[in-house]
Length: 173
Ligand SMILES: CC(C)(COP(=O)(O)OP(=O)(O)OC[C@H]1O[C@@H](n2cnc3c(N)ncnc32)[C@H](O)[C@@H]1OP(=O)(O)O)[C@@H](O)C(=O)NCCC(=O)NCCS
Image 1 (cartoon, rainbow, N blue to C red):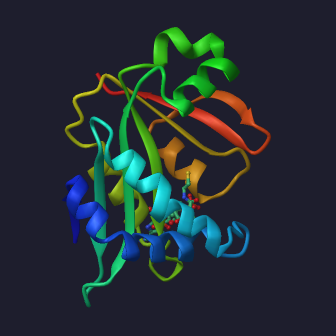
Image 2 (cartoon, rainbow, N blue to C red):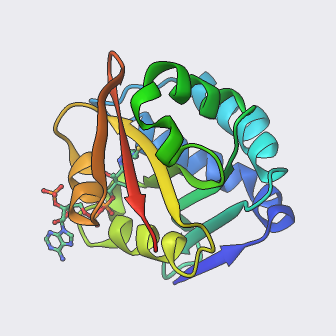
């Protein structure tokens, strides 16, 4: 079951979100450490939950345990990440950066992967957004996340946003 959580509800289950983050991004091939999951829950999520347009969707399994989540917010110039995109990919900035939906995170616990949950969380997050365009950055190499986004109609805008990540965009109107 997938539910949308408002900022207060999202922050109230930040321990569970940290657990999902740790399981997904700590898996072999991703290899983020426990400190990264801690930073996500203690710093990144509270900062982003305070931004306009914040939307988080979360999935629970049959026993009520959190199995996956996705979230984003309205990206604006002046935000650190939006400004990095403008600096690194100036050729797409006028068309894409500012007032867009910034798709920040998507994670599914390994035990629940490969059954369509990531795709369903993506669709729930993107449904009924008021924005006319959306941006995300993901791994530049071939793995489930970029495959999922391409399947969902995202277009590659800049292949080497960082040495390991690529920038994708999607027009919503
Ligand atoms: C990316 C991620 C969220 C995808 O979650 P998921 O629940 O496995 O996603 P889906 O099940 O919708 O799709 C994954 C694969 O399963 C396949 N699949 C989906 N339903 C299926 C089914 N019923 N039977 C068989 N295969 C299925 C999809 O075709 C897809 O295949 P592909 O990777 O070869 O393209 C997950 O791999 C993850 O958490 N990764 C680590 C964190 C990460 O990379 N996050 C994104 C950062 S930008």
